[in-house]
Length: 293
Image (cartoon, rainbow, N blue to C red; front, top):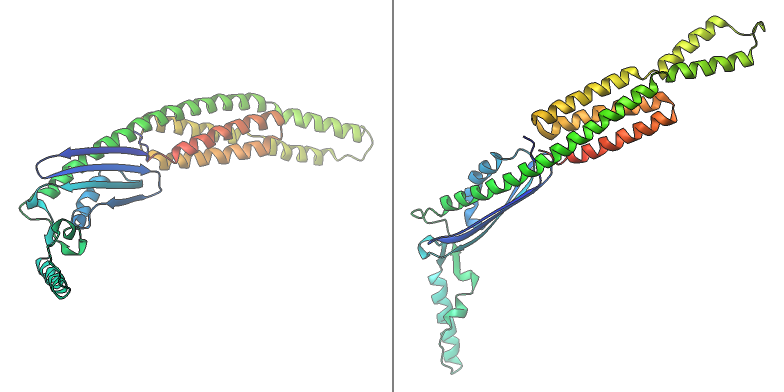
């Protein structure tokens, strides 16, 4: 199935150890670019979590954000710097004594001093990392489901656009069937008007050669055939829902190439207008393909 590179998923949970909330957001990108926003002490777990993300995605820019509140003291990775605290209190008491004041520490305010807390590794006996991993996987499941749903919508839209281009290609084929011959007939008539029969100034053999070369230049049957083949490949790719945006983008580039060549060779206003319509559909398809994984 096709997947969009744009998606969102979230999961939150409260238990006796912590409150966790994971959010996964992604947009399109040529390669997989992954960024975690988690507390520093959880960085050893990021390689594990990266493998989980890669099991779902191969392209796109993905942000994984964790909001975490640890409610169990046994699970806390922070340790009070008791030496620093005692040194601070001792100095404050000394200053108060010198100034003739009493000193009663306000521990509520003191505990807010971030420098008194040392960040350590997660306690080994607490499975906080495993709990967070399970939460991440739940968020990834929801995120991936949104990508699948959006991919299905884009797949149907692409199929409709390819069907539209198929009809446009049939119109061009009908219009160009006698296009070259009509232009050659007009050119021959003009030559006859300029060089009446018997004037002796017209090299008939040379004229035949030049008209043959012009006929080859005006003939778009090969380009139309290749364009039809590329549309067949697009239809098959969209039907199977395999290989994703990279091959789809390649096929669309090939379609653009044949459509441009056909428009340049046809030299007909009506054909050129339909070619413009085909290229408009191709451009819309390419915009969609750039968002498919």
